[in-house]
Length: 346
Image (tube, rainbow, N blue to C red; front, side, top):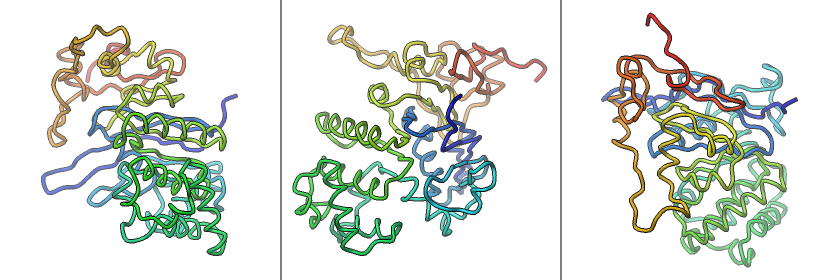
């Protein structure tokens, strides 16, 4: 029997209401995360990965807001009366983003490694001050206890001389150390779920490998669930056990990482994998690129969102109806009329 998920995202919709029109940044996303599992959200820039993560944490900036769907989370530590509803789950989409209940979950139960650590740390407060503040916000400890916990977190993530770095400012640290410090901040309160938003984008390849190894070891030690957001399929192959492929705010394919990499079903997933260099790629050869570009958010194509760039486009079908996510094989799901015939009479 499969373990019950700690997070179940169902038909999530997050729209931005602008003067020019409505941007459907997340448009019907569904997936689940279990304890100890690493779920990778992948896709090109602008496909809605980061907004999905922010929607779960309820930190979408105005004029964006969650307009539909459910974000069912099973609290691991925080006692919330509403968690008694829906079999022990609380629907985060129904909570006030700035209310007491959501703030008790954010940071303590679900933590975030943001895309850019430099912009996330306060430049006028030391790293230690900010760690202590986060710990005391969610735990009933005094300042000295919080300081000891903060030093232990810095030590855990491999920050050298943590007593010295504790009093440093973010702009005094190198990119790699800053990345480790933001991971320590995210882990300060032992969250059950960690959302890592492009945690290796702004660092060099050597440091990237170190950060990935660090996250893998911490995840195994703590049996922590991770949602790993990235556009790098090579990184996903290293860290994820389950993959969710997004395009233009929609999930086009999802399944175990082995199935996605060895037997991709959706044309978009296939195109993404073709664009990855391998050891067998001849030197100085051009990698196959996906034709065209992601449509402008105010000019979404009718039907399947990927059809203007798809090699297998079927006129009269793909440009008229939007396919739904359906099972393909085993635990693999995909939304494509090549795999499931379009309904007739529509």
